[in-house]
Amino acid sequence: MTIRGRPPKPLEQKRLTGRTANTDSGGRPLPQLAEVVSLPSADGMPDFPSDLDDAGKDLWWRIWQDGITWISPKTDLQAAEEACRAADDLATARRRYRATTDPKDAGAVVSLGKRLDDALSMLGFNPTARSRLGVAEVKRASALQTLIQQRSSG
Image (tube, rainbow, N blue to C red):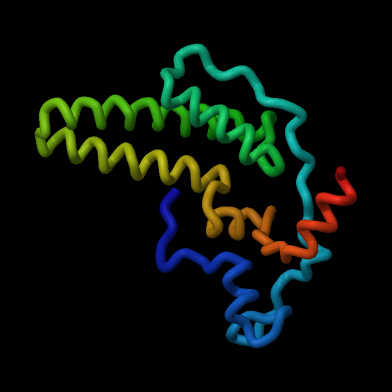
């Protein structure tokens, strides 16, 4: 997935730097917080592919724990598997580079790191990707909001 030009600003940043809470710095309207659509979350973590090593299994767990609110086991399973295989390949390349310090091995580490970053971006694991997917905005909770939420859930 090649994207040209500067990456788009996350909606959270546009709200902070905008002319008003509902417009960006150029005066263009931003989506209303009430209009942000919540996607149905997965109802559990799917079994990980049997060919994953430790780095891939760790990433698999993180993907399904941290991204469970927007990642679908039906539509995103292939992308999650690819990201985990990239994590395994990157871990192997790093071990090899540390053992050899060969510049070709360093190039493999860089290339595989980019592959992993792209795979995680496709899954929405950075603010720009989440903004592009339109699934989430990070909202800072005040101390009062946090206290109210703790009391209501406790």
